[in-house]
Image 1: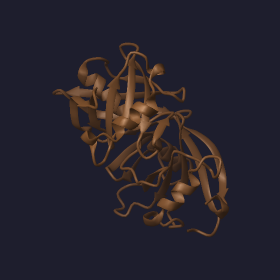
Image 2: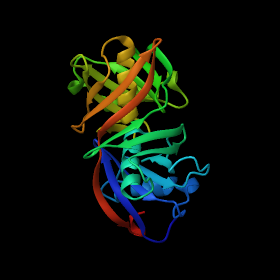
Image 3: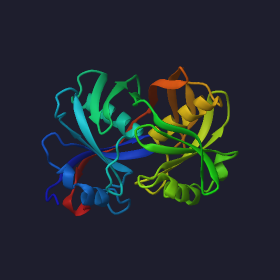
Image 4: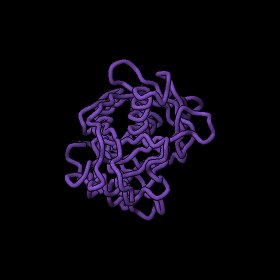
Length: 275
């Protein structure tokens, strides 16, 4: 592992928190980072976070930067909506991007980001795929869709009363979704454009205070079902409202975006004793 202090910034997107490292000079070996990620994401024993974002140079030279995104268990994820929003604000504030509108590379391709006024940041997400409007898994009826990572959406009468950890863990690992598994979103519709959402995230293996791709998946699923109309505003467990917008063209979603507030939490150096 690394034997010297590592400069970092901790940021949160609606309660989904991340350790961000400017890794353009290769301080962290991203290909061997999993044990280090698990160590620094431990709450109370280290910095603590839902994940780690390593910002790197785009090897193709087509984007302002690239990223490697890791869940707290050390697994590498294809995409993260809230992480993307944090990365975009960090990149603009620290000169990785020279404009408030930028492009960065992820495992699912090039993503656009917009740093708006105040703390608001919007990212464009890849076109959803693998939509299945009705899936039965373990006696639970849900819809599934991939918004950069796979998601299941379960409509409930009262989101507050759902045992997210128990029910989410059972669906996340159900054989129907093997081998990748799914993130599981429990949603209560509260208005023509509003809903309350709670999410069990794979890789974190528990409930998170917000999940950007989960909000996007839920907004699209509800829009396709006619239960809500875009823009969809989702109240997250962290207290913020995330806005999912898209257009339905020929029965399919296009122009999918996710917007909400991003905050700095801390900045400094992690000591090697942290891992």
